[in-house]
Each structure stands twice: as structure tokens, then as C-alpha cells.
Image (tube, rainbow, N blue to C red; front, side, top):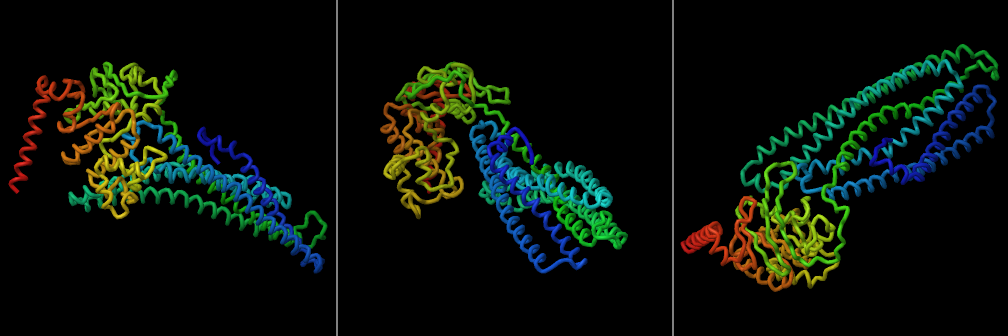
Length: 595
């Protein structure tokens, strides 16, 4: 059993189950200690020839009833305690996942996925075990061990005190080893985390590894990481095994003491009368040994409990550190309740610096987007285009009134309202490991098959989908591995269009499709997006040349703003970009003709 601010409430939430389980456990512990009394009585009865068939039958029946009661009791405490630990595991996993969904982009940029997954697997299992076996061992040590010790003390206090000396040594040794075990377990978890990170990255980047013929190098690197994981595991197992072996040695020592000194007591009192309080009979020795045999598990449990608690405490520290991560992107205390977003956007002296850095990514951005406009944003790589739309999605916090939506400060609007009003086609075109149909329908809980097909046609990907083995039910693999780059982009576009948002953001969403496909999709978007705001980030001039307004960004600043024709007459940088792309197209066309 362990305690901490993130788990204490589970003891209250499942208090009844824990109480019922502990009551059943204590009853079983009590019943177990009746059996040694019966065994001792039978042996003494046989030795003194006072036992009869009816008495023996009575003992057998009582033992049978006790056995059945113990079985029922064990079933009950397993249901209540182990079953409750599974419920806690379920609740904690939900808490971890819910918290992970609220953390900012910054957190996931600074922490690797493989390491985070260790919280949901090894760490959570260690904490669950503290609620399950931890609870069992605590109460077995207290009640089964305590009651057995008490009965042994009543039978012969001298023998019991002598046997207690190794028991005290067990406790001291276990406490010392426990602190070492906790450190070893933390190191083991970290090694597992590193191995998970490396393995996951290799699986995701397997194509790159093969393309650069780097398989042998990666195998060697994995071997190094795996050796570290092996060493940390072995070090932990050695510490845990040392504790178990030491406890076994001490228990064996206690057995020797009991048999030797107990046998001596029987020998010394063999001639005394049956009722003499100083007499120590063979039956009493058998009862005493049975008490000790019952007490072996609690003594073993002390070591296992310290070991288990050390693991659970180390894991809880890691989980707590995760759950204590501050949720940075939250609604303002004075949130303005807006029922509907129209799509009017104003960037008002917007400047932005990423958390933990000094250089401004955006500097004094000033321009507006009216409802129903198609606005193009273009600029060289690293100019701040994606950052601009990330801020519009409320992925980062801003100063007051730097972005206004429908005249309201974006920081005052509910995050849910903002994001529900926006459809987003990200630059990386993330595709879920699911069917094509579910990927397109992701934005809506209820959507018809006809709507899915219609949006696929509007995104010019329907023909490709019809060629797949299972058509719209085709599973695309992890991160859409079975789709080409152009197919991923078009499925992402269909996913955003089916949402029918008031604001549509397309971040470099046509880079992997040819110009003819691009023209078809843009034409469909113009028809679908009438009276709704559309923002298109692009590298190709052809993508945004027909936009109502084009913002040219360079080094985090808007250096030109207007239509395509206006920028052609006003901006040297825009002219340079147009000329360069025309030359590239001419060269590509010439190469094609030469073939």
C-alpha cells in the first residue's frame, strides 16, 4: 500500500470493496490458525490414547468446514481486493490519458513518446500491484503474522523470543535493501524508457534506415541500449533476490531453533502430567511448528512488501511528475460565451516567441481576414507561416487582443468553441491507423457514407480509394503507411471539408499533388466554401494566386499584402518567387520533353 495525492482518493472511492476484502482476508487468517490446534489435539490424543473414532470424525468434519470457509473467504478477498485494483488501474489509465490530451504542444516536443508510454505500462502496473498484493501482504503481516506470533508466545514465550531475534534481523535487512531496490527499479524503468524510444523511432523511420543502408548501424545501437536495459534489470533482480535469499536463510534458522529448542522442551517435560502447565507435548510442538509454518508467508511478505512498495513508490513518483505537469492552454477566467463563430479574424500587432526561447518568430503582424474570404499565406521556409495558424488554433498562449475573432480576443473565447469552428489540414497530414472511411469521418460523430464519398470526390481522392482492396473500409496502417504522400494530403483535406467549419486552415496541403489535381480541389473548395473563411498556406504561387488576399511573410513579418496582381506590381520578393517557380516549371517541362 502506498499513498500520494494522485491515488489517495481511490481508497475513499473504493472504501467498501477494500473493507469487505480486508474483512474476508482477516477471517481467513483467523480460520487458518484453528487448523494447527486441531492437528496438535489429534497428535496428543493419539499419544495419550484418549482419542476415539467419533472425536476423530468430529475433527475431520471441523477441518472440512474450515477448508471450505477458507476457500470461500479467499475467493471473496480476491474479488474485492484484486478486482478493485483492476478498477483503480482502469481509472488511473483514464486519468493519465485525459491529462495527456490536455498538455501543450511544447510538452510533446520536449518528451519522447516511447518514454511516455512507460507510464501507461510498467509504471501503472507497479502501482496497481501496490493496491492488490500490497494490501494483501500488509494485512497478512499484521493479522496472520501477528496472531500466529501471539499464539506462539502463549504456548512458550522463551522459545518465541529466541525465534524473534532472526525476525528482527529480517526487518532491518529488508529496510536496508528496500532503499537500494527503489533506486535500482528507477534505473530499470529509465532504461526501459530509452529502449522504447529507440525502438519506436526505428519502426517509424524504417524506410529512411533502409534507404541509407543503415540497418547494421541501428542494430549495433540497439544492442548497446539493450545491454544497458539488461544490466539495469539484472542489477534490480540481484537486489531483490538478495533480499529473498536472506529472508529464506533467516526463516531456515528460525526453523532449526524451533525444532532444536522445542524438541528439548518436549524431552525435558516428557514425564509431567497431561494437565501440568509446564508440560510441552509432542502435539504442542506440532501445533507450534504449524503456527510458524503459517507465519512463514507473513515473514516472506515483509521482504516482498518492501520490494513491491519500492517499485510502486518509484513508479508513482514518475506518474505524479507527469500528472503534475501544468496544463498551459486553458480557458480564461472571464471567458466570453459565444454561440457561433462567423469567421472574421484580425491580427493586431501580433508578436510571438516560443516558450523557452528568446528570438521572436512573429513580429508585429497586422492584417485582417473577412468572413467568406480565401486568404493565401506564402513565404520562404521558416518564415513563421505555420506558427501563425498554430496561434489561431490556440495551441499557445498570447498577450491580450493580439488575435481577434469576430471582434473578441481569442484568449477570452472558449478553446472548445474556437477549435470546433476550425477545420485543419496539418502540414504533416497525420493519418490514423484506421480505415479510410473513419479517417475522413474523424471530425464528426455521425456522418453518412454518402457524405464521406462526396468529400472524397471533392478532394479528388475517391478514384484512388475505389482502387483499394476494401475501398473505404481499407485499413491504411500505422500513420497511413500504405498511402502515398498525395493520397494522405487528399484524405486529410476530405477530413477537414466534411467538418464544414466556419474557418478552414490548409497548411501546405498541396505540396504532394500535381497542379492539375490542385486546380480541381481548389475549384471545389471555392464552391464549398462560399461565405466561409479559408486560409491556405502554400509554397507554390499557383496554389494561392486566385485568393482574395495574399500575405507574404518573411522572417516573421508581413512584407507585402494584397492580391496576386498587386503583389506582382509592389513586391520584389514576390516577383522573385514567381520568377523562380516559373523557371523551375520550365526546366521540369524541358526535361520531360527531352525524355
